[in-house]
View: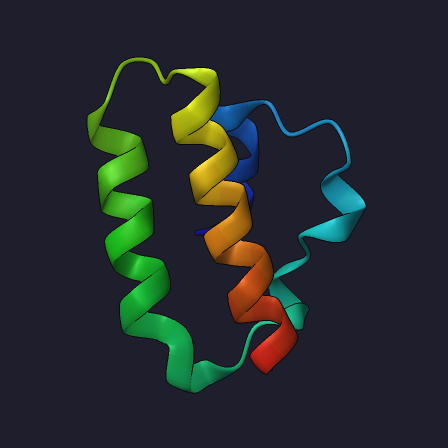
Length: 62
């Protein structure tokens, strides 16, 4: 799911968002983000920033 999100958002620094950085107990949160990202055809810069920030905050908890 993380790889799908990186691809859809065209993340430049993909190394900063590796799936192994996230704990298994974060699955539901990541799934919700994944579903939202996959459902939208495009994102504003602010939306992308918010998604990346949320995933970054989750990474720090892992």
